[in-house]
Amino acid sequence: MFSLTAQDLDNSFAAIQHHGYSAMLPAPPEWDVVVANWPAIRDAIGQIDLDTYVPYKPLTVFSPKNRANVRVLHLLHPHDLLIYTALTLIAKKDIEANRLPARSKNVFSYRAAPTTDGEIYNVRGAYDLYQARLAELAERPAFKYVAVADIADFYARIYQHRLENVIESVATTQRVRDVARILVKKLIGNLMGKDSYGIPVGPYASRLLAEALLIDVDTQLKTSGVDFARWVDDFVIFTKSEYEAQSVLFTLGEWLYTRHGLTLQSAKTQILPIAGYREHHLIRHDDRLTDRDAVVQMFRDAGDDYEDAEEPEEEEIEEILNALQGHDVVGILRASMQDTELVDYQAVTYALTKLPRIPGAPADLKREVLELVIDNAELLYPVAEHIATYVLSFDDLTSAERRRIAKKLLKPLQSKRRPPPPYYAMWILHIFSSSPDWNHANEIMKLFNDNTSEVIKRSCALVIHKSGTRAQAVAIKDSYVSASHMLRLGILCATHKLGADERRHWKLVAGVSGVVEKLV
Image (cartoon, rainbow, N blue to C red; front, side, top):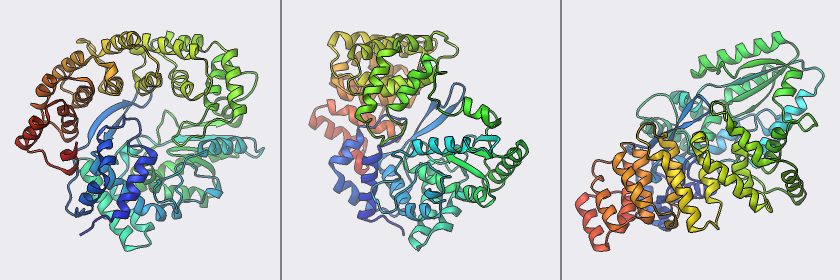
């Protein structure tokens, strides 16, 4: 028997509160129920024997990874996310102790602080340190070539048996050795549909597990005398000759494949002369920057791209505001969207994520960017998350503005011929589930009825929960019995529109079970 202690679960709860529920997916409202009823939920999970526990089936959604590829994301049931995070945290100290030390300046991604229980890792300033290290190595006269490599489909191709072996090998206690078995063989194996490959994509705990898998790869490079820096699955290797760069790439590729079943992504793996690397890969701060480059750089300077980012200093804010005044940001973004085949998603993403975080950014500029994005939303499916968060950053929209924005955002979702992918629909519907002020429950109820995607149906149910009617909740609840676990939670949220006695009776008849389900 293996069970989690109250302290294990408190650490897990604190870590999820700190990092967030899931990367790249909207925070589920069910988590608020967990927060409000934490002692009861903690006690219920603590009584589970994880040796025999079968997790809920996660909700899967495909999101754009880049212009041509997609990645699968997994939204875990709150129960399972708490267990997954708790088990990872138990192994955290031993995993970090066996990674190359931070002082070696080789591995920068997701470093864990062993003494911080309610935190999986700390990325504050880490990406800036990584970029600074790359710039430092690129200036060394001895290095003439740079090899750049990226692991193909990293999380999806992680061999679970190998991950289990890694955790066992770094374990210093029997409890951590037990975690290797429970976490990988029992939990991850079931979450991934009993496939032998892959770990959940989305939960922040997965990032530390992925780092654990590469411990031997980093060590092999280091002991071979290779000068390299790594951020997640991106390796940058500095060499004295082209032959050396080619040799290291072959060795890296062979090690990854024979030990882990992983391969390097051919499209991103290349060897460059050092001058070419400086020109095309390093962030540049010189007069050769185009207006577009300068604006993207300005948004970069507003903070890094990872959670826990520090707020800009006063001097930085002043410089950024001056840059905003000196560049036609809206014109640059408009030009970024003109070519429907090659939308400049980088420029758009930086603008949408950073503008709301710049204190004193001109309100008129923010509004112009909002109008531009809404008018071109059909071109921006890959950055749906940033569209939603940007729209929700405005707290002063009038009812008329909301209606106009809602009409434009819903139009693609209502298309019969070529509707957008569920990932886009999920994020757009997240706007409508954020507040009853967005309303449009009638149109969204029709989307629920017309769609077979459980991702879209769940998102629609969450909108009905916020702004729907009793009649709409009655119609939605009929789908409960045949629904998946995460769709059921969405439907349970929607049924709050029923009368209290009516809802209580329906839950008994429907056989609603599970500690979270009963509390939703």
